[in-house]
Length: 115
Length: 114
Image (cartoon, rainbow over all chains, first blue to last red; front, top):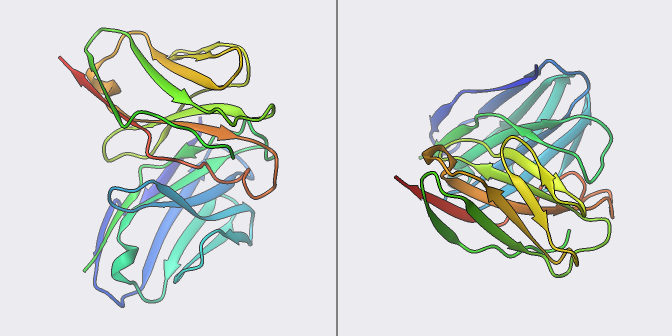
């Protein structure tokens, strides 16, 4: 069966510090991968998605970046965190071609607090 | 993707059925209706999806109106563990960008009381 891991589970970082969040998927090959963010009291917002190694598409311009160094690994990074980067970061995966029936499976999330 | 409208919150007693409504009056013929839920402090979880016919799975049932302008997620017997925010989402292959993101709105916060 497929599983998705995210770490760390929680993180407290000072403003201006770097960030690296990791997501890995097991039990599937060539998944589509996604990073979402949920700010406090708000809905989920897609940040990045990837359909293959080295292929990253950004949905929202910001000080965050994403990389996919391996087929089942997705990394979210920042060189300098802002207070507004605080939130709940969720990684998700799906398989197959892009269709309206596509189901996305979410990880447990990383709760980031920037002080 | 077309827009959906859901009540902000609903309340149910444990072990009773729950009907969660969703209005999508501008739905297109190729929009699939998806439901996800998010338990407190967890990532969203897929519940069910359908196009025209009613659908059943181990988690819930999805009843779709004949004109497809509304749908209802049915939890047959609510448990305390079903307390979550339920999101009704329309998905279409219409353009290559909309297909990648799940457009979560505010959803319905379901409270289950013992």
